[in-house]
Length: 488
Image 1: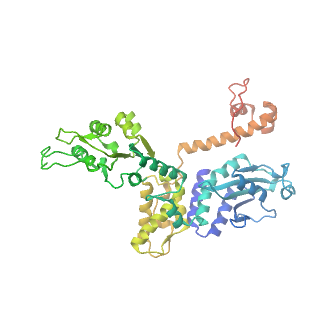
Image 2: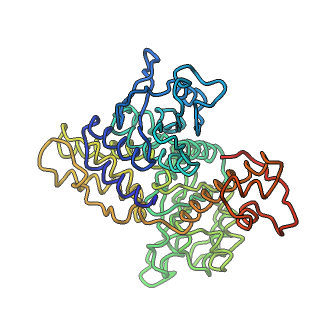
Image 3: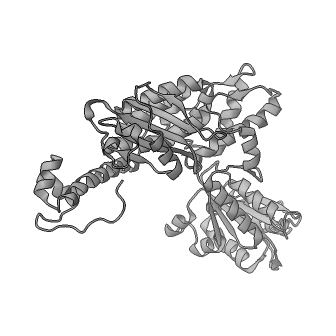
């Protein structure tokens, strides 16, 4: 059910550019999904403070409940009323109806309220079910993203400038925490381990640490350990004396010496052979190295930053990486999130890459359509993260034939691999939602009827055996302790 929503919703978001037409289609779709009489997308005017309906699936005789919408906006919490007319403190506008079932869900972006997704049902005296409420909350995140894009709420060029941190782009809470760790890493001599998938920006983080440190006026040397032939690793890292191997006619300094008083960045350190890791450990611990073919210990003064897309802690547990070396190089660990876990930054990143290529191609008028932005946000970016996003933007701009807007179809990304493909974990989360909803519903009836199983079965229409299972009774004669926590 929810898989179908993601599929249909994605198609809708990437094919309609006009905000008014999109809003109408979106609200109609959500109305059908929740079997509501109406779905409204509501925002508040920043100047007047008045509630404004941005999109609505149907014009009904009764108005939306501004009281409920204001409640959601002020509290930031979802509201579910099976029959608002029966509430003792309901307003006159609601009480005049015999029956009115309402769901209100906040729409947020980066912890900021964008608006409210409002559903009501007045026909057939049939209230919304708790499952409808859970579905609406599930949809809210994706609806927020496309509402943000369709409404052009962000002035993207301005936001990119505000969100840039030493060539790293992102204003999400996750990235703000990364920036905090970068500053801390730059303040001291401690070793830093940057962990992240390919394309997440590990090298940019290393550069930022160096530029913010008091070593910024000294060299930053980078070595891609995974690209070094085994026979050259020793000499590349620690240097070599004249005659230490064939064709070695002069002394050569390794990167540890070349980075003296500066920073040494060892990228993909997990690829260094196990038997070479002991010598690397001694260099890190003792702050001295010995060149290949030499005997003299040479003191070094470098800040060491390492990076790997492998989880080095797990590699150490598998004996593929020395445990003592892991602990020595990871005095501060920075875990970079994959792009799929910070999708709120995608519009900023896309605009940043667009501006870079516009200058190179001299195409000042080219821009991304709203459907293209939606397509970018719904793609999973599993293979290349930010680097893949950059290449996607660059390729689309080269192939684009005029200075107009780039459409979603020009991005050439494989939409079949997006979030339609649900993992077992996501399926379990839906199972958990349904189980929790059933528990909340049954336990409320159970408590309201003095914990009487027969009364609970009669009122809910659920068999006694199933009630035992839902409430977690170990036996039919033993009552469980009440669960702690709030009902959904």
